[in-house]
Image 1 (spheres, one colour):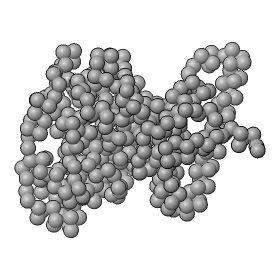
Image 2 (cartoon, one colour; image 1 turned 120 degrees about the vertical axis):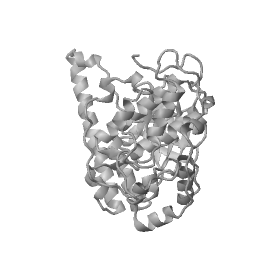
Image 3 (cartoon, one colour; image 1 turned 135 degrees about the vertical axis):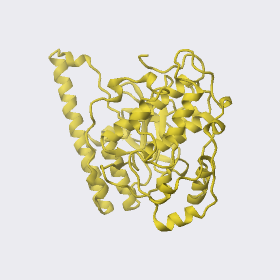
Image 4 (tube, helix red, strand yellow; image 1 turned 45 degrees about the vertical axis):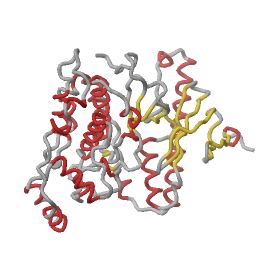
Length: 388
């Protein structure tokens, strides 16, 4: 047996088999979905708890293979920091304005960084957002992420229906602020405790939206394709409800004593700017970050950090066979292992030479996965981990 083979072991976790490096121990299942299976593990080298994602049948067809490659390119690896819960679990808790505002601030920061790299997430939903007990939030699952050009209009794709923006439902194409609609749906769910627009299909989803928000303007209708416009214009017209009725004060926690902007009226104001059917009138990420309900946490270094490397948008246009996608993924893995080895050698040399570099820490995970809610509570110890 080769030295490389000796570095791995095979572990049965639930109904799934993981063949992983021996450094990862004590595997236990924590979640699964259409695209993969996630387990928690202990990294015996870094002495940290991690989450490991295994993609489900990534090579069953060309679409799945391309999605797997996209996720590898964006994330580089699928061993991640272990988080405490996903937002589905947090939504069921009584959140005060500080926690809710801070979680939204982090979502918007994350989306801004994605967009600055030319990436639209496209699949934001509570199960794709994870948090820790200190309210640190991270965004998951980039298998459906898509590049965003300045004039590149996207085509509809399978995004979780409840958080799907009107322009996607109506086949209008979309740009970056499609993610803002999803954040608005998530915020509304955090306040209500249930899904805002639980449509059973495309048509029902549209009806759920206009019943609450009202039928859009004639100017909006004119931008629809003729067949879609004909259908939409022949639907019953709805006036919609004012946001004071959709989100009455009774649904909100008490106003913050520390921050004047953290109150029900400001939360509603942000919601009514996010949940706008016409994307041309919907609030931008930058403006949302400056909104009074959000900007209490505003940190220039967090919001405008170093620009990430631009994603190679040609990935979205490539057409390969499953075997070719396999080869590309293999090359990504080999390239990453080579980079890891170079970094390891550099750190080793720095430590040998007593360089100051040995005192700095580097995170090797750019994404996260959730564990349990055991450490997420509603007591005063769970506070936004922020300089303010």
